[in-house]
Length: 412
Image 1 (spheres, rainbow, N blue to C red):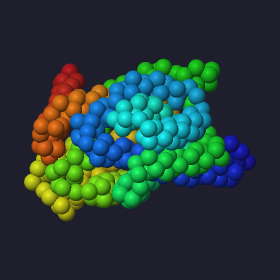
Image 2 (image 1 turned 180 degrees about the vertical axis):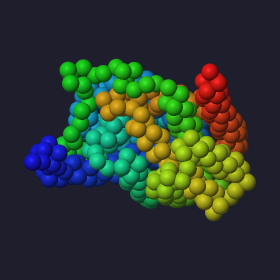
Image 3 (image 1 turned 30 degrees about the vertical axis):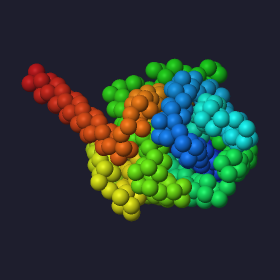
């Protein structure tokens, strides 16, 4: 007689599939609003005459807030219901963005955006950590690589929509109206989360979050993943800091051209999300990460010599490499970390990325108005080459130690 526990429940499967669909819809809508908020803020600062240094300060404020909040947010995502955390965060992001739009009508642009960034980035980190930590639960019995690729594909598709929409809105509408329109997508995202009921074990059986050290072994694999994520994160935020100035000052473009740059980045990111499954089968994770870092370095250094349309193609390639790396890192973390400690692991990983990002922001804030953006891109490309070389050397040494240990044991 078959065991009833082993027979799949159709209602449960339908509910899980519906929850995953709701997560995808919420991810898309939130991505439009989130990326639109950052694109609009960066362009508004540059157009107001504050330059790339002001954009660097703005994003440094975002990063500093995330650095402080990430560990706490990670613990909250492991202790409380992740769907409700995401829902509250979306509603708060909607209120903050709408309040920012109103404040732009009466207050100083730079001060308004920086204060808004503190509140927005706190809620943003809650939403991202909660939503991405839900993936293993709502996508259970699916491939982790395929599920994460689909989520990041939808996210980057939303980013592409935000880039196209933001460029048009910034060209046709006042800044305040642009931010107000974009804020509405956060409200739509929250609506998709309401019917969602993921089967989420975000706390341990006794109601107390399990210590992260007990949930998984913190070894060199996790440290390596954190390093790769940090380099990818820093390269992405460098594009965010310098993208507007690169177009406005060095390329002589307009808001529409800046929208095209962001669109090319997002289009490349969409392709990058799709490429993980075939490339993951063709090579191991460590080699793939080194290839991604090396390719990113080459593209960043090439911007020193490129002008439109070749520069746009380079940004598309950067988008491919960035999202391919992000999805690969996400799958790697979910593979070695248990569900009830995933939030804290992501908090630690994001803190590492933000810490390196703050260094990049600080340097850009100091030299951003004295050195061309393409020169700064080139310099960070050199840093990536050095970082990838160090990671490669450490991997070779570790393999050598393992081989030496096995030989010694065999001789005994």
